[in-house]
Image (cartoon, helix red, strand yellow):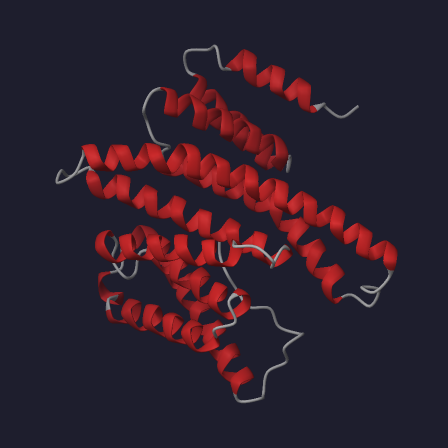
Amino acid sequence: MLASASKIDELISKASKEKDFAQTAVFMAKAAESSERYDEMCKWVVALVNARLAEKKDLTEEQRNLLSVGYKHVVGFRRSSFRCFQHGEHKENDLIKSYKQVVKGEVMKICMEVLDVLQKKLIPNVQELAKAAEGTETEPKHQEACIFYLKMVGDYYRYLAEVDSETENAKNAEKFYVQGSDLAEKFLPSTHPIRLGLSLNLSVCYYEILKNQKKACELAKKAFDQAIAQLDSLDENSYKDSTLIMQLLRDNLNLWTARTEGEGEEEDVRVKDIE
C-alpha cells in the first residue's frame, strides 16, 4: 500500500523534533530522490526550509539544489503532459480539453506552492542576511543565493504563463528574471552557471512567452559572447555546468536564426532551457 501524505507528514513532524533535523531532512530528501518519490522529496525540503529559517539561516548550496531538483521533477512531467494536449492529434476532443484543465490545475498548484516558499520565505530571509553582511566577504555568498531564488521565481512564473496566458504571469516572469540578472551582473562572473542559466531562461521567456524574438536572440548572444571572452578564467568546479549552458545558448541561437530565415521546423524542435 502506498504511503499516504498524512503518514509522510507524521514522519516529518516526528523527525523535526530531533536536534539534527537539517541533516535528517537532507538524508530523507536524497532517499526520496533516489527512489523517484519527488512529491515526498519536496515535503522534506520544505520542512528543511522552515527549520533553517527558524534559525535565521539560509539553505546551503546542496540544500538549494535539492529544492530545485525536487520541484523540477514534480512540475516537469505535468508540463510535458500539458504540451502533449496542446499539440496532440486529439487536442480538439472535449474529453481531452477537460483532461487538460486537470493538468493545468496541477501545474498551477505546484507553481504557486514553490512561489510561496520562495517569495514569502527564502528571498526575504536571504535579503536580510545580505543586507546584514553588506561590504563583508560573506555578502557575495548571500547574493548568489538570492540570484538563484530569483531565477527560480522567474522559472515558475514562466511555467504558469505556459498554461495560463491571460494573467500577469509572463510579466512577472520577466520582472524576476531581470531582477536576478541585474544582481548577477554585479556579483557573478559571466561564466558562472547561475548567471548563464538565468540568461538562458530569460531568453527562452522572451522567445516563447513574450514573443520578442529579437530580444531573445540579443540576450542569448550577449551572454554567450561574454562567457566566451572570459572562458580562460572559468572555475574548474563549474566548468561542466557552464559549458553545458553555453552550448544550450548556442543551440537556441542556431534554432532561432534558422526559424527567422525560414529554415526551422517550428513544431519539431523544442527550445532548450535549464533548471
